Image 1: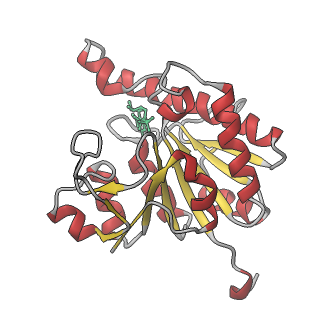
Image 2 (image 1 turned 45 degrees about the horizontal axis):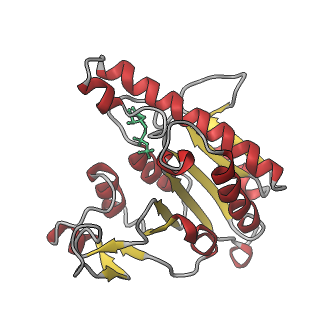
Length: 235
Ligand code: UDP
């Protein structure tokens, strides 16, 4: 493939919260809606997805309530795999090809995480979903999204947020004077103390000049094909 034919390649981060619609587990109506948007955009864009698991377990929360942190984090990672399988199923129903790759080996369920194979899948028009986070306790799926985007040479990390459609000067739910920003640098975000993603994900993207677009869940279709929705954070 020559450079002229090169397709846009993106890494979409979906939080677990979105899958459950605020409740525990997977809400099929919501996931099927997201899946349709993704399957449609995959006709023109190469798409890899990192799914969160907050609709099942968050390690830090279980650990605060007495569990061993490492074990609780593995439970969190297994939750992301359930979301990955649900999303795979609904994207397939919407007519696109999907492969799931997990950072913890589970051969009966998914392929192991193999970045070169993930790239090959995308070049063949398949969507790739990364489950089980980094396979490492004490990490978040935001950080994994940044790392995977870098490793598969994505053009952009797309962070779909629940309940907010971009980065604001203050929390819009608490401060009515908060203004939405359309474009800002990582440096500005740091200086102004704006929370975009967790600190490790933020610094990975900043240090490696990976652009990040933050937008609302209902804007996934547009963000995938490159419409400038939400907020662009760049080096
Ligand atoms: N997790 C982990 N390592 C990773 C990714 C995730 O230990 O590389 C665990 C961690 O306990 C986390 C949970 O999986 O709380 C769910 O992921 P996350 O909180 O990032 O999901 P989201 O908030 O995006 O739904």
